[in-house]
Image (tube, rainbow, N blue to C red; front, side):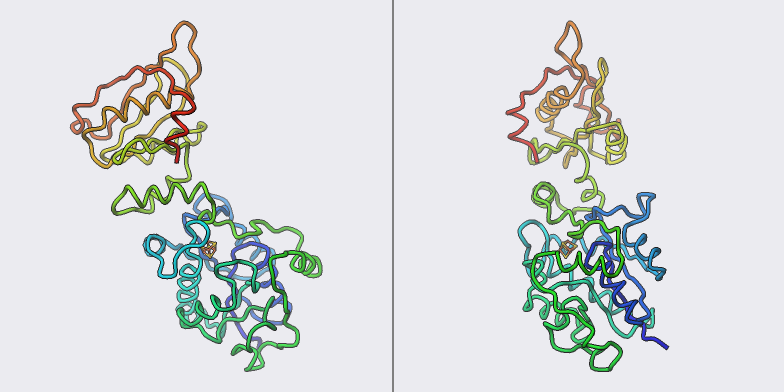
Length: 343
Ligand code: SF4
């Protein structure tokens, strides 16, 4: 009977290759996929299949998916081993993923773990010293096989036990993806997506929004993190952030993020976006509301005969914020002013 192993499958090129490669070596592969609000790959929660699920189906292997929520968010706020070039805490992220996978091994009756990691491909988490540190901290030393780069590492438990033939393993390293592309051809893998893993934490613009969130909001929630993906966002004061929808679907989504203190602005005399004002406190926001209206007016359809847009303001709880008017008139803000406050 073949030995069972967990393959960490993101759905990107490297993990896709590793899964097929190990399956063809006769390993009984069970795929495990971790996802979080920071993944760009489509996921089940959005009504579509994630790339990892599509890959598992295509290769006819079982897959288990695990959501990384509150605990993951806490780790991102204060990673023990710091961030990469953006808000990506790759070392801590991998430690968390491996530690969780080790817990799952018993449940799934798996003898070892394997990944599609390639030595030297990512500057933070795929250097030899980082990989050793990750395995040590996660308590998985010797249990993780990296078949694409195995020859650069000491033999792991599956190799020593003879479950996997070390001679057949590979020695890929470096940032070029050419060897993986060639291997994908050999393994007849035609379609792959998210070649770099599809993580928003490595994205400069998303990271700016996340830094802003951590700076201005206490007790950050997953809902706050999800909202960072939507609309045009502006920091108007310590207490106020404006999110302006970019299309109808975003306008509908933004409305659902309104919480107790927040306000929504709707253009009444022309077509235009919905604006959500995320407010830490319900008082002292008069100036920010006026500025938000000028920004929202910038994206409204021009009206013949007048330059003013009339907005209605909707409060979540009518009894709160009794200093807020029901409507507000506004002229458009200039690009320069908006650029200064964009996040
Ligand atoms: S790129 Fe994102 S998902 Fe990948 S290890 Fe880094 S933080 Fe984790």
